[in-house]
Amino acid sequence: MIKVGIVGGTGYTGAELLRLLAQHPQAQVSVLTSRKEAGERADALFPHLRGQTDLHFEAPDTARLQQCDAVFFATPHGTAMTMARELLDSGVRIIDLSADFRLRDPAAFRQWYGLEHACPDVLEEAVYGLPEVNRERIRSARVVANPGCYPTAVQLGFLPLIEAGLVAEGAALVADCKSGVSGAGREAKLGSLYCEAGDSFKAYGVSGHRHWPEIAQGLAQIAGRKLDVCFVPHLVPMIRGIHATLYVPMDRVPDDLQAVFERRYAGEPFVDVMPAGAHPETRSVRASNVCRIAVHRSVDGRHAIVLSVIDNLVKGASGQAVQNLNLMFGLDERCALDVPPLAP
Image (cartoon, rainbow, N blue to C red; front, side, top):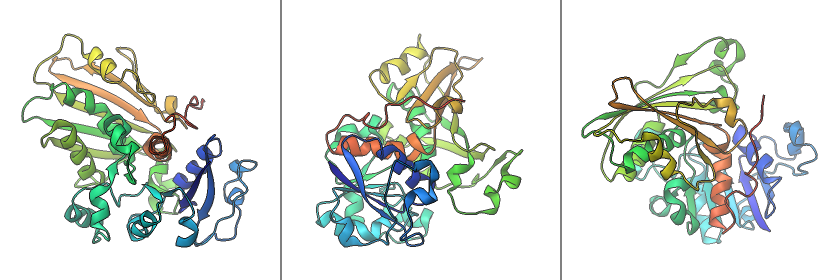
C-alpha cells in the first residue's frame, strides 16, 4: 500500500484528494495536515466524507511526512518549494498542486508570483504533469508539477491542431475561458460570495493572469517554438467546471478535422472526443477526471473552433494529481478515477 501525505487538506482540492483516495485500491492517506484545523477530524470539516475517512488533521511535521511514499501539496504557492528538498532527500515523491514547479524559469516565477524560488535545482528536474503530453517522463519523476485548471483545458484543446501542424504561421491563438466559483478556492472572499457571483458574468485577469505563462510555456513545448496566445478567463455563477472556447487560424484545412482529434486521443482514458457537431457541457464532466472535447470549423472555413470542458477540481486539479500518482508508482492510471460523472 502506498502511504500518502496531503499538505493543506482543508481546501477544495484537499477535500477532493481525500474523496478520490478513499476509493483507491493501492494508496492510503496516512498524514493530513492543517495548522488551523490541527486535532479536528477531517469528516467534521467535510461531512460528505463521513464513513470514508477517520483521519485527523495535524500540524505540518516534516518527520511525519518523510514516512510517506508520496506527498501531495494542496497549498498556496510558496509552501511546496520550502519543503521539497528535505522530502526528496528522504525518498519521498512529490505531486504539487500549487504553482511552485510549473514555470521552468525562476525569473518568470518571480515575475508572476512575487517570490524568489527556494529550490531552482529541484525546479530543473520537476516534470509538468499533463499525462497526455508527458506520460513517460511522469513515470520516473520525483517531482510532478500538477497543471493548473485553465491550462489543462486549454492545452488539451489546442494540442491535436498544433501537433498536426495546422496552426497558421504567425497566427495568434485565442483561449476564451469560463470557470465556476470553486476555482477561487475555499477562503472567504468578497468576489466569491453568493450575492456577488450569482446572477452575473464577468471577465477578470484580462491584462495578465498567472495561468497565461503556464499555457504559453506548455504550447511552446508542444509546438517546438513560441506561439502567440491570448487568454482571457471569466467567472460564471456555477460551482464546478471550466469551459474553454478556443480559436485557431489554420495554415491549411484538413479534409477531416474531426479525425485529427480522434486519432490523437485514441486510447487516452480521460479525453473524450465527442461526435462531430457536438457541444460539450460542464455538467457532463462534473466530479469526473474526463476532458470532453468537440471541434468545429468556422463559417469561413479558415478557423478551427475547439470546445473543451473539465471539472476544475478533478481533471483540473486533484483527479489529475491522482492520475499522476498512479503513473509514478506504475499503477493503472485509471485507479480511483474510472467512475462516471454526476448528473444532474
